[in-house]
Image (cartoon, rainbow over all chains, first blue to last red; front, top):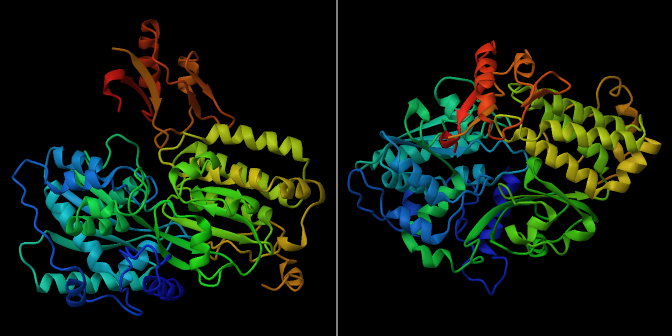
Length: 462
Length: 70
């Protein structure tokens, strides 16, 4: 995480392109260490603007956010103004939940904001609360991100000491699981349940925390909101494309000189992002766009990718929560997919049958292909039929995301999958693997662990 | 005002009663969980759908009025 911080800082001083002086926005003057203090924050950004709101009406900020065209940066990309409006018009006193769960292992942007620039996020939360008529803000931070928990805690204290009729704000640490950041899972957790998704309706905007209308918003989204409130919607649209205005945070990982969190102009090319990170340090086999609910793009296509919805759509991809993960030529895409598929199956909250059984079956199938236990044709047919039994049959998007991830790997790395199905493991297959996943993930199922120690010696050096 | 059936996948425990009582709309997957056709129900099936919903031991099958859907 310190790596993310320092490169984010580097990026802040060294914009992607000298012709775009407007970047960085969010990451401007990001401190090398520790959070930016409230005093420094106010010197840099100025005081929080006031948006007068009459009782029982939505705040004028919502119209500004709508003109800016801000969309949610937690992955779904839903228009922020529409979500705020739904909460503002729902019956009852609203609550704002700041989502810094960031369960996606390949994403670090939200925890980076929380640990380095918590005040811009809290500004956004405060402004959003005012606009939707909320008297309470709950900041949910992943329990394993200690620097982010510390950054938010310190920032809340500074703000309380200086308070003028702010909404009440509290910090809650949430479990470090993949699905905990799902909106309904956060609400369920804040109401005393497990951090598991729930069945909709009701959705959080109509009946969320304590059955009150709840705006669950990603940290980066709120940070953008705070800047739009200060500089206006036209300023926001100076960057990006008409359909995707503004800038976005992207976590870039894999074989590049400086992996980390970068702020890009929406629609920027992947090539420019890689250049900003000092270029690649190995040949690229493929790029995972959007994280573990995202889509693989084969290496030869990577040079032509633009990070916009329109350019990614033909590849079946979206930027999701701003994740770009490059896989080097030293990694085996089949072994990596097997490892990730098993992890995704284990991250199921085990509430919905099709997800529990389907993701396990898919992981087992990929594991069989990886070790060459079965014929290619039958296995691919199995994979397709299981995928169709999983999609759209869970209460949340986890099974769909996992299926999309696996199927896109099979497509992007088709020849590797064929080779493995026929001949079994390759030299690059060996653990620990390249994809960032929590430590405990089993590489293959039973019987595979004994020989790992020996095989690891033969692994190519990175 | 048409009706559809929908399943709450969290509540569902694969008892399979629904597929017995409403085979016109519900089949079971290889693990015993219902695959639900969410097309609007013809009027003749609405009562059957309601009976299937009432028979579900975990109340996981829902008969929803069209206009109530998001």
